[in-house]
Image 1 (cartoon, one colour):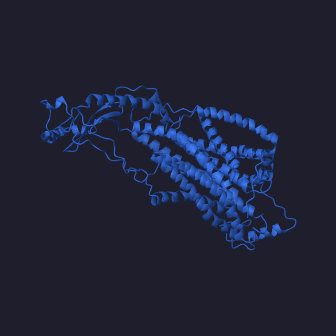
Image 2 (tube, helix red, strand yellow):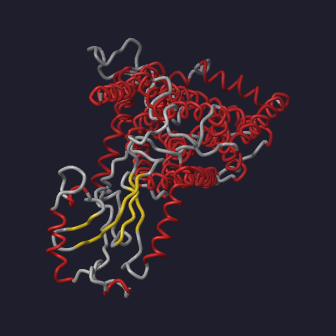
Image 3 (cartoon, one colour):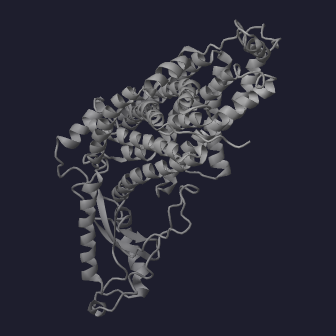
Length: 610
């Protein structure tokens, strides 16, 4: 039976891992459609993939972080979802440069310089906010969460570096050899193009009858969407449903409660998960079912945690410390003078004989059968204890924090009673623990719940600071931050409506929520600041310049997350739902909420002094 279950689990892992390939394939297909070149699409997906090994090399070899968290595998989907955003921003700036006049089109160098300044700053701002939002997880004491946050931040960082280097080089090659109708990078026709596309664009823009025709999506955002947002009546119609929704989402956010059932590893309708659920919930435990052993041990002290850092040394979790001469150096008690008291000179031989005797349970020796209760190294008794079997815990299930906490407090009270009864006879206090790490996981669940709130709030605060610095306008930074906060409330409220509770998976996802929700509003805020003219003209220009980039980024993120919705592993499926909700709400609030606020308050931007 165990072999069959193992085969099923391996099969689940294999098929779910193939979803990552499907995500990259879908992103590649959309890249090909939007950039219009197999060559650029191929280089684009290559730089997205390369950001993963580069980030891992930097983590393991430069930073010397040896801890690999299973959460790090999520970065495959994160970079597939987010990595294409920078490519769209860069390519849209490149296309727009063809219509910026003779000053920009004097040469390929001047054109790429304009593209670099235009797109590089926008991508730098979004990459910075996203990286810092992921780095908020460093404040968590749990090594897996810190490892994931650092790795995810580095993936985003190297994706930005590769866009500004590798992909930029590819665009120059594309400009020189492939940017002409009917040219394919696999055909022999793609020699150096004369005259170059930049020269052609310059000649067209110099003609008196030249008329710039932008693509349909950009035209739609510049005219239809911008005009819709600038209508006072339409903004009023938008305000009511947005406020009602935020009120509902806020209410449900406050109703999110810690999970009270065992967290499921697979989706509910999977046969294996159904069997596990039936066994756990429909059949009460019998006396034959083994429970978790709880140990009360004398002779041990608190673990020495000096120099413990699992990020850099995952195998070192601390050094055990023992009470010296636990059996001999005892406090004064009336029993020490009794006849059965064993003198210290006979201790080693008697303990050696006792340890080698056959136990009362089978043919095991005493030392083998009681190896967790009887700490004898052949010369010294390091510790001794007793164990009790818990009727609540077992090795197969992970119970919610509140249930484990109640049991933990009960066992702690037993330990306090032991100390009170035996303080005159025993050297050191009793240590209560379990070896199945139920109490450790209980503590981690509490940390996850706290970090979910603190991580989200720190991410929002960091986003506000970066926005203030980058836009140099408090109102724009404030409205953008409010948009991010609305996304947080909307996502958390939505998952609560869907019946989710605050378990380990949900807490991890909430702690990185700010990292996913900043890109679109930051792009639009930066475009508004960089635009020229009146507030109305700035709004149109920012929609026209960034509308298509933000839309394409949203679409690729949703496309990349769709395969996750069909995963069997519960955490991956929840991550897919979470990513879809975050991206959708981020795009909606950035375009409708944030831009409506800019249109309503008509924020003017002071011209920079030259």
